Image 1 (cartoon, rainbow, N blue to C red):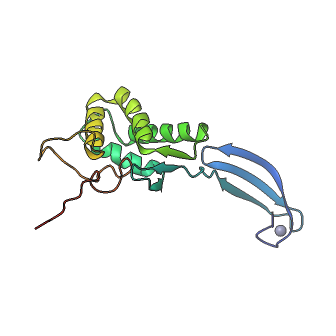
Image 2: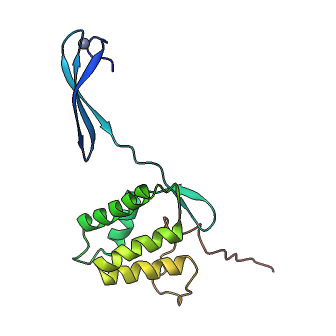
Image 3: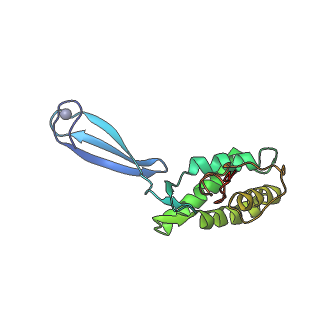
Length: 166
Ligand SMILES: [Zn+2]
């Protein structure tokens, strides 16, 4: 690596892996200055395949938001828990070497973890998911929050087209 001060050749003195990435201390062979570099661990891009066949990158942040939404009044699921769950899912995907995951499989993974965390949040997410993916036709007005779980579902409504034929 080039020294940021003189452009000389900088050797690695030591490196340490942290949760944030790899931290390396370097020493320039030319000007003898020392500096530290950080290399972020880049999470491999995992794509979520929606029911429509479209894909979008898996986003732990998005998942955290969804979790916080379904569990907003639940004391057992706060930001910390939601983050842990989302990171857990992400880690499982990375460990499995997955490049793609279907939205339904992802939902199953999330729901499995959420069930152990908070039953009511689980019920809400499950209902929401089934509602949006068209597995369940709920009664009108029953908190239909269309598109709320964008991560898990396809576009807009489950293939229903309303045609005006008159
Ligand atoms: Zn230098």
